[in-house]
Length: 380
Image 1 (cartoon, rainbow, N blue to C red):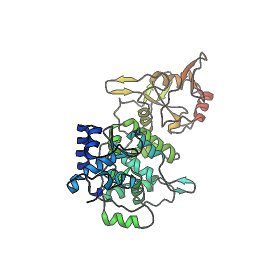
Image 2: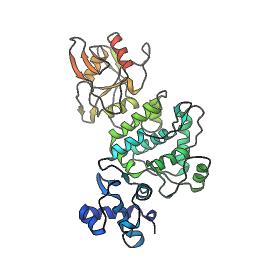
Image 3: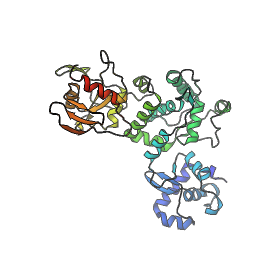
Image 4: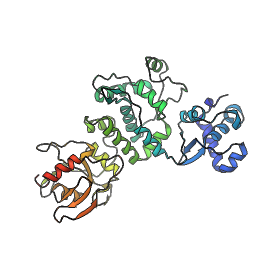
């Protein structure tokens, strides 16, 4: 009986016993030393991965394995527990959030004409859209193949073939995706993957810990989305892409009219990208730090630094967007507030500094738009 015969229920039962006994008593009872390299993270707690796997084995062979009977490395315990949907990390202080965002930032994507291919990012965005709406985590291959193929055709690089088997298998071996009924899926190279997927018709999806994180933590989900958009889709209609993968309207906000009278007629845009930026900032104004709370939830406005449309021709991209309260939105649009390249906020009427612009990971402001605003603000 091998470790690969473990199931998720056996591991959860063992974790429950670990919690009841405490770490020291659990390890002493079963003869294990404290882990040095690999830990399983579950519900925010860390567990000695080799001890958990070895004791869980009693559900397979009738007894717990002794520590000397098997290896506790990445190729054995780490792989088995990861396949069952658990997060296994080499760092004691690594959180699911840190682990996930690190993996998103280090995707091993193929390159075409000097540009990273979009197969894996599109697959992840599709899955994040499903998680945002709490749709089923695991999806049959025929559905996965059809939906990801369509995304690659629509938003991939010119000339890309719609072959979703490659990103699914790549993400599986990278630790973000799972094919729960198959312990040994092929690598994402050559012609074998498509034949294997068609023969086995696997269900697949985000690993359980990733899915849980994405459904429960909107801010982390937004950070991942923002990174994927800025890194892989700078020349794509990002609003169209977000809407296409189900990320266009995942947060209920107070409704906005198309126009509001101020000293000018100011278009209040509330598209998918604007909602993403506001989510990253927790609907907190980047200038004054105020979060307005309304009966239906927090309220902020997405403000374009360089306006869209004629005659300004600003771009609808994260680097051209700010999250502002209504007051600071008006002051910024009218040129009473400007922002220097070092992100110092200036009261243009008095010349006084209002402080640094508030920033968050995943949202970088492009200085070219700030310069345009300083040169033209108050003229539109």
